[in-house]
Amino acid sequence: MRTADALAFAVARTARLRAVDGALPHITGEDGSWLSLSPVGREDEALTGLPWTGGFVAGQLWLAGRADEAAAVTELLAPRAEQATTHDLGFLFWPSAVLGHLATGEERYRDLGLRAARSLTERALPSGVLQVIGDLDDRAFRGRTIVDTWPNLLLLWWAEREGDETAGRAARAHLDATLPALLRPDGSTFHAARIGDDGTVLERGTDNGWSPDSTWARGQAWAVHGLVSAARATGGARFREAAERAAWWFLDHLPADLVPPWDFDAPPGSADASAATIAASALLDLGWEAEAQRLLDALAATCLNDTDTDGTLLHCCYRHGIGLGLDCATAWGDFFLLDALTAAVAPEHRLDPLAP
Image (cartoon, rainbow, N blue to C red; front, side, top):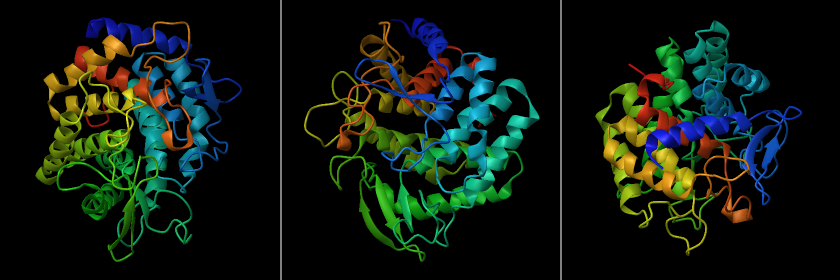
C-alpha cells in the first residue's frame, strides 16, 4: 500500500474509535476487539498504576479531523490534569489538550494543557528527576525514572513556548539528570534507573524489557522521540547528537522486515510495530525522511489491519513480561502511525506542538 493510501486508510479507521461507558480503547484482546479502560480508574497491571493511553485516542481523533469525538475524549481526560502522581501527564495531555488547542484555537484546551504541565513539574526531585510514579516521599519509588518520561516532556516543551518558564527548566533538569543514566555510549538505552537526590545513579535495569541490560524496543523508540523533541525545543546540539546516536542504534538493529522485535536482545518471538511508528514520527522531525519512509513502507506492507477487528496497526506488543498484549493493536501505535503518515504525506495538516 502506498503511503498516501495508508494515510487515508488510517484516517478512515478512526471512525471505529469511541468511548464506551466512559472507557477508552487501550489494546486489543485475543478476539481483536478493543480492551478499554476508564481514564480515571485504576489499572493495577500498569507500571504507573493508572491508565496512560487515553490521550492517544484523543490525538488520533484530532489528527483525523473528528473534532466532536476528540473533544468528548479530551473532556473525559480533563480530571487527570491536577493529578501530580504520574509522569504520564505528558502522554495524556499533549495529544489531547495541546493538539485540541492547535486544531481549534480554543483557549480551554490551552488552559488544560498548561494545568497538566504545572502538575508534571511538581514531580521534580532535588536531583532534577521527574519521578515516574508515587508520592515523592515514598521510599519505594523515590528517584525512580524510566526512559518513557523523555517523550512525556513534550508537554513541558510546549508549555515553555506558551510562557511557562518553569516547565522548560524542569524538562532540562530532568534530561540533565537522566541522560547519563539511561543512554549508553553506543546509543542504546536502559529502560529504568533510580537516581539519588544528589544525582548519583543508584541502579539501572528494566521494567518492561527482557533483562536488566537488554534494550527494550519501545523504550529505544521513546528515547529517540523524546531526544528529538528536546533538540527541536531547545536547539541544543547535545540533545540532537544524543537523538542521532539513539536513532542510528535503533535503525542498525532492525531485522530484515524492519518491524522491531519487542526487545532487541530477547529470543525470537513477539514483534512491536508500535516502536517503529514512534521512531518514524521522530525521524521525520529529525529530518531523516528516507529512513522514516522505509519504516512506514514496511509497516504498510505487513502490519495494517484490513479485517473487521479493531485497531489500525497490528503486531504490537504491550507488556511481554506479564504476557499481556503480545500481538495486538494499541492506542499509541495507531496514534504515532497516523501522526507519522500525516507528517510524511500531508505535513500542512499535521498538528505539531513544536511547529515553528
